[in-house]
Image (cartoon, rainbow, N blue to C red):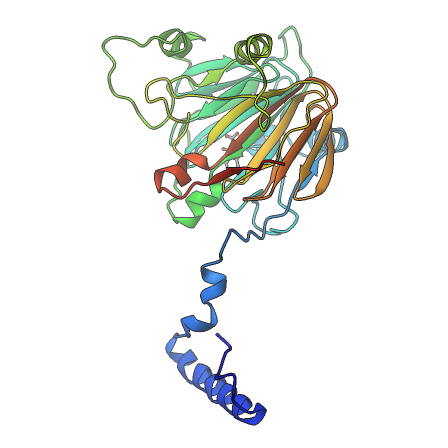
Length: 360
Ligand code: 1HN
């Protein structure tokens, strides 16, 4: 640190500083530097993230996304996505230090070719219906509010049959653990030999096996990723509607449920936790903060997210990010449903996750 004996005269002080600076210069070619100049920044008293709060208004983004479909096909792009990059993390393709977010568009008749990678992905359907994703040979059809998983290192392709009942564009939020995998320099990826996977199981097969609070008897190998790869919105929404009827809202969170890996009780993916919460009309939450920076997607309702004293007005399909430890207050003008994801399971696994519910 900068302190020298308080009684020292200004010239002694300068001399001492100069000696130190010269010393730092001399050790630099040896790739050494003094910890005592960095300690405060390296070990802050509380989280000091460079990530800033931000909101992406879907009404502004949608026309730009549609324009991208005139520039490039899903197949040529491999994944036609507009990345939501944190304004304070330029060049990082990150929405928080640990998480990636993007909006992916698929048009009727298009295919996003099969590949696999170490990064885990979640999809949250924002706009349109009728597109599908195939994961490890099983297809699931997308509807707004569905939460879908692509586990690490599983083959996946997306498509949209032009002849489905609803045949418009389909847009979803992609959440990936890309920055975490990059941090560990542990990323691998490969393209499939076929454009689209051969479908080997009927739609709904995984859900029948694991989605009803039951599990096949001769299956005891719980893995870090949930065997349910699509959590339909209708079911999650119904749970929230019943809670709204039957119990008072939590003053900080409203009615908030976390998605489960039914075989472990933990988060659906090793690296990302996901949540769905309902805030009643007129709700003005108490303030809370948590060390897991969180990405929110508005499903229903309008209101304001007050993030560290900055108000962000939201409406359906908007996406906003709450940085680590930023105080959050949620105000709902109407009954509001928010989906969210964060790196909470990783922080919990290493024992560093903290949250605080303030009395205000
Ligand atoms: C990816 O594979 C998908 O499969 C989406 O839809 C976004 C961003 C970076 C790297 C791989 C997808 C991605 C991605």
